[in-house]
Length: 205
Figure 1 (spheres, rainbow, N blue to C red):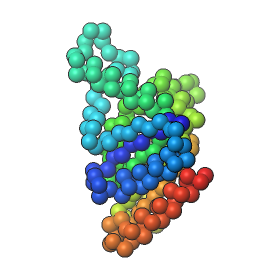
Figure 2 (figure 1 turned 120 degrees about the vertical axis):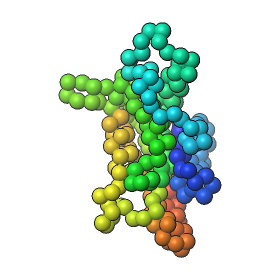
Figure 3 (figure 1 turned 60 degrees about the vertical axis):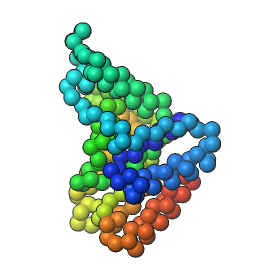
Figure 4 (figure 1 turned 135 degrees about the vertical axis):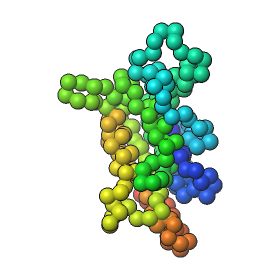
């Protein structure tokens, strides 16, 4: 098994999503001790966001001989990231909610792997995902409560991740969620304990 582990929280060691994603990975490695692991701290690595010149590297619009060394390096990075993703059987993502969506660092990675002809293709009947057969487990953290109640309509984090990976053909997207993390230390620890139990359930499944 090849496991790809991504973290996208700005909070470093204080991050709840990093804590939960590591619990998931630790459990997977106990189950599959021979698994191959690849890890990216998307905040520390500072993956550049797409520009027209960078995106041209996988959209077939690069004018011959018209790229400099920096853009060529970004094209190579895009190829390495999508190849690494396609080589993975299971992707674990630490994804906190920032302003009702995902961190921009995670979005930058998603933009690099959404490549026509590699992870999806367009047909006369609409887009078709090419990356099926993989599993994604998301460690989702929120300061408030967005899974139910009045704020549920503001969740553009989990719904976006499910839609994105579904577009790539991955329908097995599991969420391990911790909410109420800014509602006081007692509720925070209770939520993290519940997330730990959910990790066990996901691993058992």
